[in-house]
Length: 373
Image 1 (cartoon, rainbow, N blue to C red):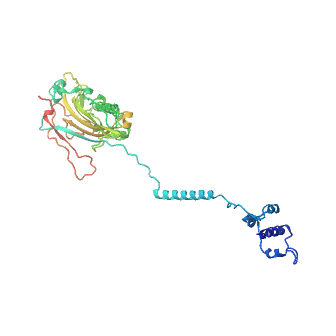
Image 2: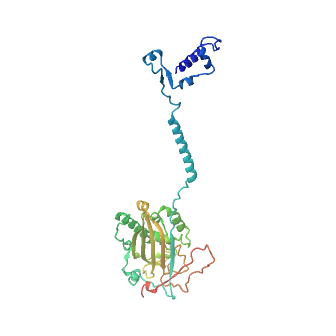
Image 3: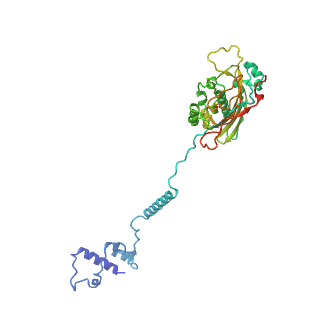
């Protein structure tokens, strides 16, 4: 154990001298055998034992040396652990990005498209359209007990559904009634003067389709002006007074958790006569009745309820007496008092034509729907 003291003295002697080995025969005798070993600072610091000083050896003769506390390795281990965790996380992120790929943008549903069917009803058998004073015609028709104007568009009780309160149901019914009234009874709309009172009630998502239908009507099942509203050709027809007789129903149900659906079914009876340029109408005996049945399927989501709008999903119209050849998708052109349809029949249909729009449709007007003689 005393050899460690010799190593220490030899090492410090070398460091203090000139660096030349001592001459042969000089003092130091047994230390020569260790001259070939170099003990640098790291070796000394790594030693596990240390020799006591002279005073310490006097106090403790049995233990000439004491153990040294081991030094922690250079650097802090937690830094390596943090680095390893970061590498693992980076690798995981790369793998996840490669597997999932870039997210595709979620496509928003487009606006709902209104579909419509407009069917002219032609009187059969060459029968003439009855004429007379409007009041007498109404009395002798099935519309004798109908209400006049908006009073005939009645609302059912507003009851809550699974996801809508009764106040929301009532709001939807109120907008539906307003739409029916403006599109079927407003004189300016009926004469073709404007469509604005109807348009402002339609969901903005359908405005493009609505505008196209009013400006460029087409018999394609989606762009009939008379699918959105009732309008007459002012160059051929005018109103004879006595108001419009109305009767119908409205039914409401919850289409889904976020939408209400209202189905309206109304019959409108108009007193009309041929349009004349400033002629005398004193007697009023040349009026006739024209009947329009409209069935609408209207949709209300929560945004529509908030904004006082609706979406028209489906419109079915049957109107007469009218010629099968009339352009019913543009405007309604009634057969008036004394006129007859003759050998009326729908226009021919080409089954090979793919883009010809809807096939022409025409119905037969039951004689019982006309005023009795």
